[in-house]
Image (tube, rainbow, N blue to C red; front, side):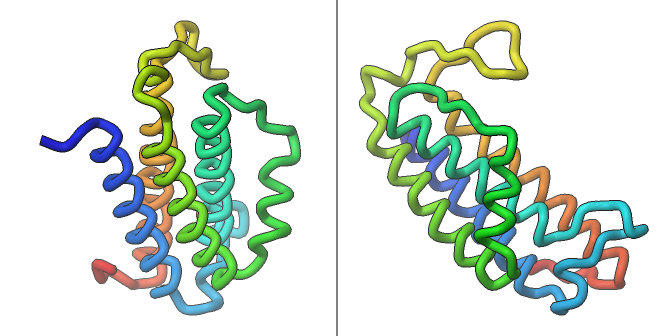
Length: 155
């Protein structure tokens, strides 16, 4: 039976690969298209995933929840400003995230940390689920964008 860490590492790696494939399967003009001119583009959503993955990877490496600056997403958007850069950044960042998960000392797994959106602290190992559910959510958003322009394929 796989450990929680190995399960989360595999799940994060798998969903990042699927999200990356969906982004790269889109026509170039649709990767940056914002539905109704007010939604978020697929590129923007992948950029957010890169940032969240980096935040959690750093938190795991430091064994402390890191504070995200107010402009963290702007800096990610600037660095990964094309779909190609973002796809590579998601792959590289997820590899770093998975390595940080596997390197977290077992005696720190149950340490409690406060999350900005929760009233009660969570176990440190629970941080490993944050990038996963964030990427799953955004994979759904990207998939929905694809249906809006007629792409119903599974990538």
